[in-house]
Image 1 (cartoon, rainbow, N blue to C red):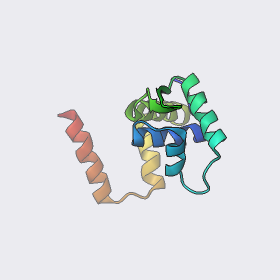
Image 2 (image 1 turned 135 degrees about the horizontal axis):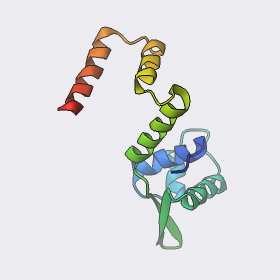
Image 3 (image 1 turned 135 degrees about the vertical axis):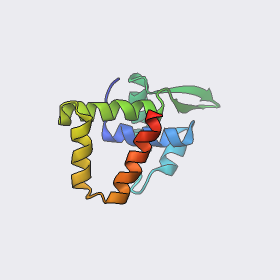
Image 4 (image 1 turned 45 degrees about the horizontal axis):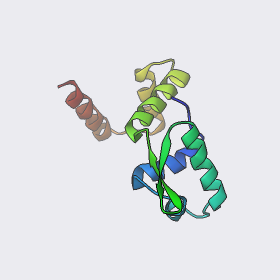
Length: 120
């Protein structure tokens, strides 16, 4: 699966939220300062070429919708992060985030509970 740029990922986050949208609806949800219509339209077409998005005709325009679900992309991105920066070690990645985010005992216990749920 191809990696997305920050701008492409921002549009995907909006499309995952909206499910289907035209360019104007995407822009409406964007934070200020909003990107220009042509910019968003170009990014959506790039997402189509990367096979993350498809469209259907709606009147004179198009409704765009995701082809890749958020969970699939998140898993792929996290695996790439783990491989690139932590030599594929989940333990090293978790340890890094624990140290950098100064997790307390309660937060660690909550994480362990989630891990234990998965093992059952």
